Length: 247
Image (cartoon, rainbow, N blue to C red):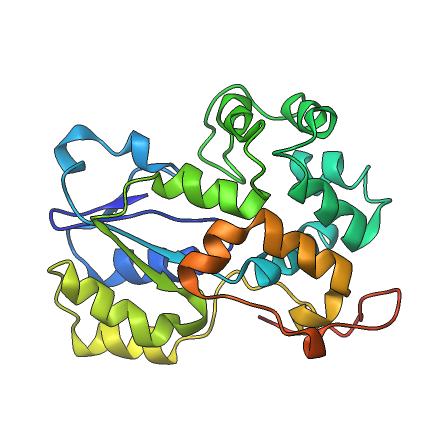
């Protein structure tokens, strides 16, 4: 979470927030970071009436990025270990468990048991009591994160799509009353991506069944931001490709 006298920026997980954080802290003199992956409900009272900025991404892309990042780490986080059965389930099995958290209490309880009891301001930074609110919602994990970080009020949200971050972020900032200097604009349009996972084209990780499960569980984000995954993009074989790339 970054606060300024004009706006607050909230960092939705693996959705371009690291890039935006670095940009704001480098080019906005009165910006300060007061927490990591903190939700809207924890915005300090002095800033609670300000516009809220954030970034979102295609849910199909999110799950691939998250899985690729965690599965390549020497010590993946507790969420990955619980959902993947300590790395034995592979992409499809792990993501299906993520999509079932809002419907399957046994999977949810397994994950809740390994999450911290309070905010830690590092890593996933998702306490068990916060994830508990997904119970019975039917939401996929990414849609839950969107609701968790941004809340349910929409009138003062300014959300851009990660896929067009370089075009949208300057106008988002200007809407919130933040001037964008030429050096800041150059950083946004020209700097390399940050915290990017290495993986093949995300659409090729999905067969028709798993793609449909994401469409159902993450319908709220898909519909709101106009995301989709065309059948022609999906794989036919039983395994996702292994050719890595930076996203």
